Structures are given as C-alpha cells and as structure tokens.
Length: 636
Image (cartoon, rainbow, N blue to C red; front, side):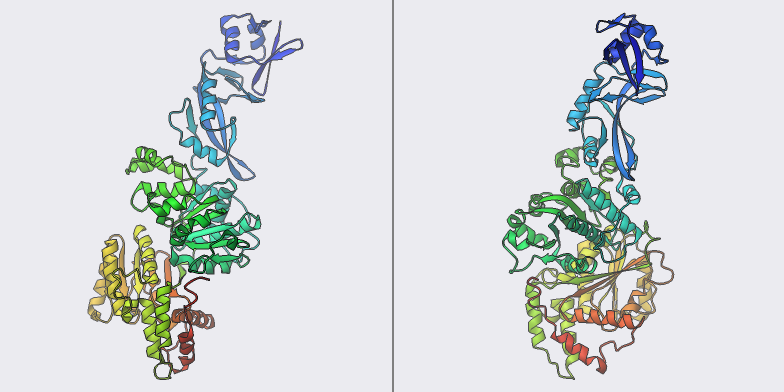
C-alpha cells in the first residue's frame, strides 16, 4: 500500500521507488469516492488523512491574484493562481513548470474545479506570460487591458503601482555628472523615471507648471549617457528649445548637445555622431523625419506633449514612427478637452497601453464613469504633482526664465533696425526703446503688419499663449506686465478671443480711482482670468494676491521695477506659491537686460538704477545695441 506525504503545499504518493504527484481529481476519488488506487498503485483514504490534512469536497474558485511585493525596495508585481472558498485563500503550487489544481493551507486542502488549469493556461497565453510568478510592469499593464478573460483576475495592487507611490518609495542616486540640487519631490520624480526606463517603459511626467519637469528629465538623460546608451532626442515647440539648451548646459555640462535647426542643420545621420542630446522642434522633426528614423534613440522626450493630443495629425503620425527604447512625454496638461487627448499622449509614450483608439473610445466615453475606469490603467505611467502637493518642498516663489530665440525673419528685421540705430550719446535711449519695442512685438515698430496672425511673427507672443493655455487649464490667474500700450491691447484682445476668459488691463489710461475696482473684479472672477498691467502705473500700491502667476512679457531695465511688479502677487496674504515667468529674446537687447539684472541682483537685493537708463548706464546700453541675433536664429 502506498504512502502519502505533503511538502511545500504539494501532495506526493510513494510506492517503493515510484513517486508521483496526484491531481485534485485523483485525490477526490480516493478521499470521497473510496477509490482504492491511483494510476494502478494501491492507496487508501487513511493514507491521505494520516498526514493531518482536512479535505474539502467542494472546489474553490480559481482566481488569478495580482499583488505587489518589494524586492530591494523596488515594487514588483506577483501573479498567483489561488483557490478561494469562504475564508480560505491559498496559492496553488507550481513545481518544475507543472501547475497543480488544488491548494493547501493551514491543514486544509481545497481543489479547483475541472477545467480550471486549462483556463489558467489560456490566461497565460493571452497575456503573453510564460508562467505564474513575478511580472514586469509592462506585463502587468498588459493584463489589465485584456477583455473577456477565461478566469477571474483580482487586482490587489491598490495604488502601490501608481506613479506617485512608486516615486515616493523607489530609492536611488542622482547621476554623478548632475550639476545641481533637487528638491525631494524632484529626486523622487527622477527615480521614478529611472524605474520606468529600466523596465523599458515610457512615462508621462505631468507635474504642474513651475515644478521643474525639465531638470528631472535631464537627470534621466545623464543616466542614459552614463550607461552609454544614447543618443537621445528632445522634440517640442520651437519656443522652448533655447530654454532646454540652457538648462542642459547648466545641469548637465558634460552633455554634448546639438540644436538641430535652420538651414545649416545636418542632412546625414553621421551629423549626430558624438552627440548625446539632439534638440529639434516639432516642425523640423516632421520635415526631417526620414533622417531621424535612421537612428534608434535611447530616450525620446516630447515636451509640451499636448502638441500630439490629436492622433490624426501629420505631426502625431510621423513622430510615432521614430525608433526609440523609451519615450518620456512632458506636459502640464495631459488632458485638455477629451479623454482621447490622454489616449494619444499615453499611446505615444507607452504604445498599446490603452488599446486601439476605437476600443478606447468604446470602453472610455467622455463621462465621469469613463474617466474613473481609465484612472487605474494610466496611474502607473503618469506622474502628476501640483504645487499644493509639494508646497512644503517649495519656496513661496518659483522663478522660471523663458529664454527665446527669434525666428530668422524677425532676426533679419531686428538686425536691420539695430544697424540703423543712432549710438550718439543723446540718441541711445530712443534706439534702445525701438529695439525693445520690436522685441515686445514687431507690430509696435510697424513691422510684419501684413501678417494677420499676431503669433505668426512673434515667437514671444506664441510662448506667452502656451503659458497662458496651461494656466487656464489649471484654473489659475495671471498678471502680465508690459510697458507698452500696443502690447497691452494686443494681449487683452487675443487672450479674450483665444481662451474665452476674462481679460482686462490697468495702465496710465485707467484713472487711479478705477484701478482697485478692476483688481477686485479680477479677484472675484471664478476660474481663470488675466490682468495686463503696466509695471509703472500698476507696479506699486496694488494687492493682487488672487493671481498665482506673474508673467514679465518684456523685461525692465531697472530690476527694482520688476521686483515691485512681482510683489503685486507675491506678498503677504498670498496663500499659494507664485510662479514668476520672465520672457526674453537671446542675443538681443533683452538678453543684455537680463544679464544686467542678474548681475545687479547678485550685488544687492534690490539695485536702484534709473528706470530708463541714466547717464551712467550709457556704456551698457551701447553694449546692448551691439548684440545681434543674426547667425544665431538660423542654427547653432
């Protein structure tokens, strides 16, 4: 008569030198149907009961259970086949690739129903998984989107795999070549990006404006280069390329960066040899798509990724053909109007994550229920922190420089105006003013007046509206400071038309008694609003803490004027962090003004100099008049 034993949850029948593992059906036949043998070997019910196990005659429900374990502090998904019956829940064993159709726990044996293992194997096949056990994050995400599974799948991961949770609990070190200091939430963001990259998954970093998405991505690029995986490509609006170039130089000075723009850009893949990071605009990348397809990029960064929210556009279609190992979509607004906006960005970053567009629209209509069903699918790949979330890490004021590069046509006109300026002592101020006005908008100097779209001839205005769009989508309020009435009228009219939000102004045309009522109306507005101010007429005396964004559309010669203007929102009584945006063109008078402002602030908290440039500033003004954007706007 054979004997029975149990080890590690597996029953074993032994008859001399012959040993085998019985199935649930065989055990049931002996224990409940008085069968006298299994596979021709005599065995009794007493032999099974002698090992101290209580056998259930009723099968448990077969369930695929997904849980999260931590291995070296890294989250790891475990996929188990369990039997569930009343309060009994236990994993079915698997030995040498063989699955068993029962589970044993605390002296209790529960069988799975006939056909359960076939259903489990079909699940593995459809999920493209070799066996039950650890899953990669990519495999886990694939399981979530399978329809009509032959077996119940129970996701017990909760929010353990959400990007925000993984970011908080994933340890790591900053790249040795990183030059700077990160806030704790920024370090966590980089570690999450690194975790996603190591899993060969794309990611969407959607932190609110002002939280430093760029520097977190730069750390990831440095890690890529340190691991000799490059090259890397950054694609975004032309308005932000200069800021990327400067930030890369600042935080990753070891990186070899190429701005691919203008008529002098390379037409051969060999032109990228020895380059760590290539910067290109959406338009240039699409125009040169065959060139970019010749390389396999380690990390493809799409900044202002809402620019590919429409999957049917040529831009979205062409960019999807780029060969890359990992994609990082950077956006402060992952969903602007419809759930399909998010589908497009997510599908670009993590292809097939949400299935086809038609399947997605069927499963996730533009309703609250559709969004609720979508959240667990996308939360592992989208990291979204707001200023309120990380307020303890942040200073009460966040300064964001917005260096811009003139387009070639504007650079040529600027150069013509510059070379025609009078640099005699009595005329330098008017010459400086003319160039500053052109930088504010060409129309102020009667240039490009034949162009109907105000943004078509002004990179700066285009960037302003990109910033305003994100502020509007986050229900923020903004103050825009400009010295020129022409710019004020243009901005107010365009914002009201483009964004359908309240937009008004305060400058010398508004009587002093009427200014505070305008501020009060601005504060009382529910939702986003814009107030355009002259820094001299409205830069002092007003308390405008309803605004959480300040945009300096043209820089002031005097740092004190700008500081006083910023203080309209960043002052006592403000309950939110205030983001200060400063727009200026590089290689123009504005670049010199910006450098001068930085130098003055380094000398003292507030430098007191003439607001229009006193006599002692003539040398600096003349230097400003010598700076030219020509041969810079056409490529680097």
